[in-house]
Length: 322
Image (cartoon, rainbow, N blue to C red; front, side, top):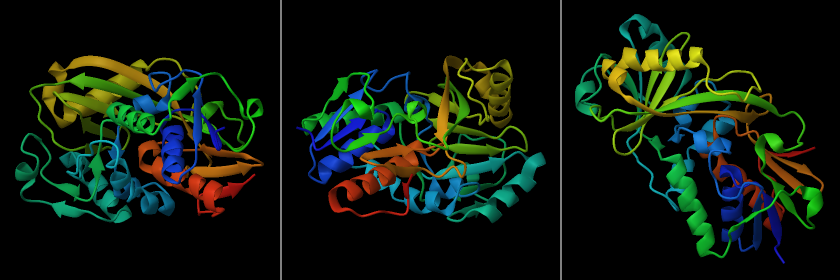
């Protein structure tokens, strides 16, 4: 018999299983769609482990816990430690100064930007967040699942709810969860192949209306993201968002105009009112939810707090009773 049943095998559910395995618990992992794939919000993430950059708009808990995410992920997958760059076009230079005032952990690069990122044209200055990192989300999910399988935990493909199982349950189903106070925030992204461009770290382009981040993947592939729309609409990417993302990328580097568009993606990020993830207890069920745009950044911390409660009775700062 499993000590804990986890329903949902996205980034939160997989991390909950990993944290419980390391704590010595036995785990049963269930998901109606099986292994991670395009059906899940985790599939469409950027993979930036950027707590200091997120501090421009996120609560302090996200910055604090997010600083440990890269080390946690490095236990199971490859993490690239090259920091993050935040830039603005010359006409939007005021945005860069405002971003600097709202964040910590950065240094101004006014000379030597070409040495730091030789293939980045245009911007004359940047903020460099040297302690940040990034990963390939789809590879990371596969590697985390492989680590679980090495411990004897695999995904049972089944449509289950907490009422279908006995004992302690972790519900990590995202928008399918009945937890109160959850809303969906629509996010859209584009994946391009641009072999003539050689960026080595995530670059955020600040803009008053159309901010953009570009995350390098292997073999000249880049993820462009991402819109943030208060909507529960799951339809495909809109023409407006496509134009805005591609126009911003072109403004940063005109060579993106010749890139091959590999795919677009849309999904809903589950979020609470304050956009801070939570472990929400409802009787024997712990809901791991509200990861918003911080899924890969906050899943390790959220999972550890759930495991600490189930194995030690410890309630962390992300723990809530409902």
